[in-house]
Each structure stands twice: as structure tokens, then as C-alpha cells.
Length: 74
Image 1: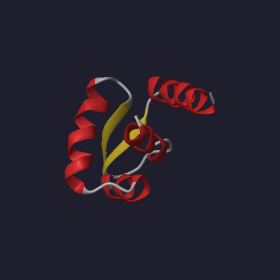
Image 2 (image 1 turned 90 degrees about the vertical axis):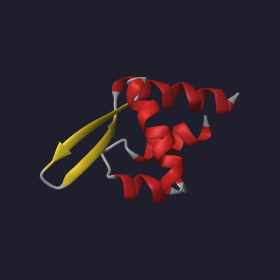
Image 3 (image 1 turned 60 degrees about the vertical axis):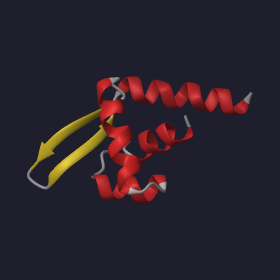
Image 4 (image 1 turned 30 degrees about the vertical axis):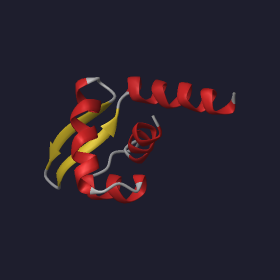
């Protein structure tokens, strides 16, 4: 859950893989495991731009983050 939350927070405003990796303190292998799962679950979107691939947290992903923060406060 912590890793998923870190990835979603890193991609809130849109980010490339490298930025997500550094902000979430993950290695490439870990990121490669989690990104397809998050895309499949609808928590993050992937878009190809003229500057490369960008990942962005979806509304569902932001809802997850909000609930995650509420649980942490409990």
C-alpha cells in the first residue's frame, strides 16, 4: 500500500518513469511490476506525448490516496 501510494503521489501532476522512480524511492524493476497493475486497476493513466510517456494519477487514484491518508491518521 505504501509503494502504491508513493507512486500515485509522484504521478499526481503527471510524471515520467524516471521521476516516479526517484520520488517513490523505487528501482526500475519494482516500478515495472507496479505500473501495469495500477493501469489495469484504473488508478493511473499512461499517455504518449511528444516528450515521451507520461503517467498521471486518475480520479480513482486520487480517491485511493485520500482514503489511504485517512487510514494512516487512524
